[in-house]
Length: 271
Length: 276
Image (cartoon, rainbow over all chains, first blue to last red; front, side, top):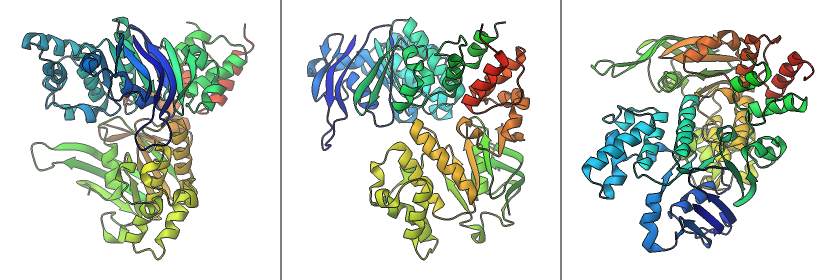
């Protein structure tokens, strides 16, 4: 379990805290979505999870290990993979397989095991056969999936995804969300940071950060069912959610979390 | 008065075996007072088209002209302004006002600060509040609008923007869309994007690019009749529009199509009648 306990962060040279009193947990096999506007503290929370930064107050524990304990920092980082927003900034290899191998190779994993891990990681993100491909020839969506494969090759127990779909078009976005679903099914705990409400309809839990504090925690359905609150929290409502709320106000039976046209039509005009 | 491409094509590395034909025989036009959205997936040629229209590239076939002059010529300089993707990464001045005034100063403006103040006001930022601030302390939406103001301050007749809302949160997105749409009153505006949803309901015309060619060029309201072709270009209509198309396929009697989600909800509710 990743546990944030009453965490506060104040960056050096800053007057105002980036986070205050944040408590949140991510269990194995759980998909926790964290929403918030730009500047709300989402990326700070992401970096706390694998000890890239340390809490100023409170504590972060990963499977019981305190991230402030220097003797466990590498153990923490091998358990918690972090994928950041711009894939270009985290691709280091000249071909895809080298890039994915970079992390585990540094752990001293033997070559045969490395081969297995790299191929499995590329396969998990749908990049089978891309082993020898040069990263700069990949599409944005493929680059983001490559960055995720790099994290997966470390066999992390938890994956923190910081706005993994921000730079992607509709197809790339759907691909990344499908990967998140299958990772959850395989027991990986996921902290998914985003400002797109539509991305989190299938998450297990949702939390909202506003000015460094958690102002909502519950199920995605709770959040979708209260569009007024979502808007007040500075999160964009998917246009479909507005459409769905008009139908729900008029008594039509549509789940509040409906974000795809197909499922809406299936609810209202069953085939 | 128009920014025009006629039979324009562009090949990268044209004289080598690495030749890539990025655009082929593209006819395109935008006139002042018009907002055109160019939609296409990665690699469809949309950024190349933008560079041709801005005069950063010369077409390898056909021609591009701005009010009758090739945009690469000195006589046309200043008539087309281009806002690159993530333009806020190019800030360099100490204050927002100095950054926005840089363009008009280089064009020999008599009063670059006045031009900068006017441009900041146009994107909804009070020049007295934001002018003295460091451009590196702004929120995402504010930074993007300052970068757009930098282009507006040059008072170009045509404003071209590459993915102007990418990476912004809801509020930033809304502010940038409002600022861009407002520019239609004084310029011809071209927005290039792989995700046209934010701009569709404001656009006068939607141009879809696929593999370097224009496959659709229609007002947004006609997209529903062309949705199969639109989606085969790798593009996706907004879910609220797709919902109306799918409902119609299931027999819902809908008149017209709504891009506004609330209006779309009302339209669907009316066709359903009272809930069972």
